[in-house]
Image (cartoon, rainbow, N blue to C red; front, top):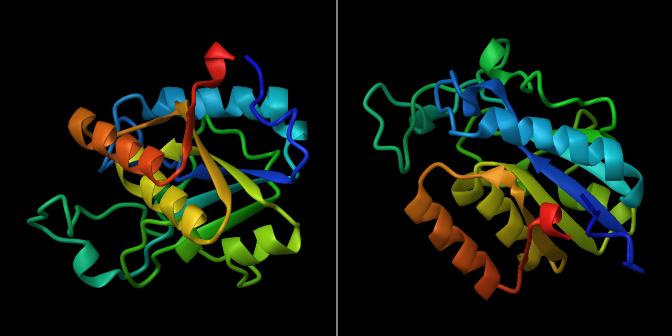
Length: 199
């Protein structure tokens, strides 16, 4: 498995989105293949983390997000309770090794938050601030779920002027149809879709 950044002259970050227990099998919003994605991402970081100037992760970290949670969710604007601070569901999945992370960004304490660009680290810095401070121009995206938080994060990266790629084999979506639509939308926005296993 080859890295996708080794020939770049620009600074690049790997942004790993929401590899948490509640988004993997057995969680309240489990994505099929989520645990496998966590394993693949860990292997990729172990092999290619040094090719990146930053390796960061986001996490849903809800305290009281209002209408984002519902006992009768529509699975579009409202969802079952998930990734509540202090619960196992909010923890990173055990297949995801966090020892190589440079920073962790938490989002959605009191509102819905899909994009990692809505998150802050323990020092209150946004993802965009940290990327700018590091001189990063290019971002690679991985994690869960392709059709929700990976999509939102990637499109925000493009809006912020960053070049963006999605590492498609290091991500998984909720629904095949919405995942395909999200990939098309991202590609139309100028995002490169890359399968690291084929390079």
